[in-house]
Image (cartoon, rainbow, N blue to C red; front, side, top):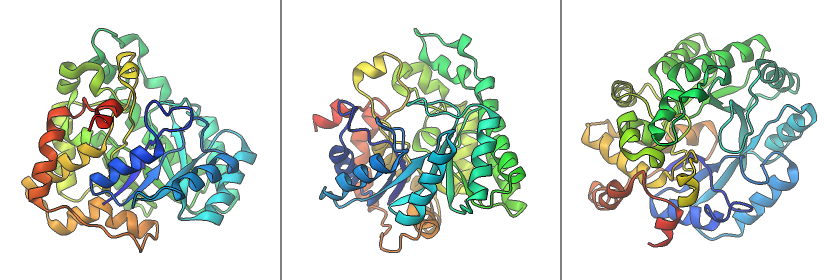
Length: 348
């Protein structure tokens, strides 16, 4: 299976997870390739840090193919530098990541004017590759709803309309600036955003979207019960939204599943950090989809075939674990998800 959205930490965040550890855990969950996100410390926004990251990953013998997304900033020269890196190193560097809103790492380009300029520069440079997007419109967030004693309030802080409006912005701005590349909406969590993606695709736009195991399996009711352990960006949604997304996934309306694996220490989570480890959740969602009667060909598409095709990963085999093994592996995962953490992984 291929996981095209992970945050493997390391470097200045070794206490959260190391690169070697993250890849080893991915392998134990039958993941054969990962795409690492750029909000590391230091960030993967310059040639030096990107080349260093690729070199360190290549030195590991984990059996997991390593690829990364290069981050974009509001600096034109930086954007042109990472465009060149994608052209030189694809598919080791699979594409660009634009945070259209802040999340862990504070790499957000929150102003529409900044986002517009990025698309303008990409179009001028002739970039036709993939831009992965974290979509949450900053001015529609409600920090005043944050309750440190009940972190299920996070679902109110980052409401569905913030995601939907941001997806609409990216589709519109990229079109207005004549960007002809491929937009990928990461960790989509609302049906409203999915309908925008489908409408754009119907108009001939190059666009895809993915859902995460936690948005398919958990709702804001779980956030109320599990508080800070179930906090992530975008947050968990209503049970009705979760059920609708699950049904849409079964119907083949979503392009693929990505974990958004984002470990923190227990202390980080106690302090309100957003993000959870995701590899065990992938096993749970595969089993849940099989139990729901998913077509096996569609399951292979969701678990890596579509990613393989878009990013020319011909050498990566996509294999779904046998159901009996999924049952065994998911028994432990279901007891801990999303409580699991780097510390719990290290304890075995």
